[in-house]
Length: 222
Ligand code: GRF
Image 1 (cartoon, helix red, strand yellow):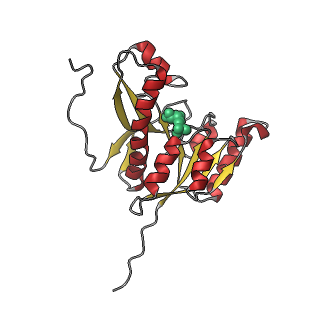
Image 2 (cartoon, helix red, strand yellow):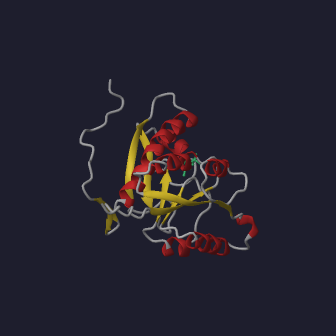
């Protein structure tokens, strides 16, 4: 019998600046031969980002592009863009990448650039989202995977996980609880995109054959 040609996987470029625990979740997910995407390149703007070691340990190609070596944000973004295109990247995944990207970059990767943010957007954009959640006294926070638009932490929402906030939480405790959810959400969002199930209608994401949660979440429960 004729051997079936394996379907081509979506090629991911992952941008990091730090420890790379979300990158690790993607490395672990893509290790499954059935996962419909593969990481072709990890780029860090910092040479000492812990995530680079995670990528190297998994045999994933890495590149450091230090933003400090560029005279402008645009010049840095052009170098990023060239490197991603040369690697054949089809989807850029921001995973703790601590540089704002120019509007030109966001536009040229329109609908092919996603981010994970540790809050239920549009609440608590920007830095210190955990502190913002605690200050607001919300009973749930969480994380959001979204397509990137030029405005910070904005763009069509692909999926979210809600995480309870407990009395007595501090930023570290809340961040750790949300991070666990992030590690489930990012691979799932990428799988949905790679399976061709994600479309954007007027800046609202629709998921073909999505299985949606159907019960309300309460917190506290008594
Ligand atoms: C995560 O909380 C992510 O949501 C935010 O930056 C953090 C990165 O953590 N954008 P890590 O480097 O993936 O561990």
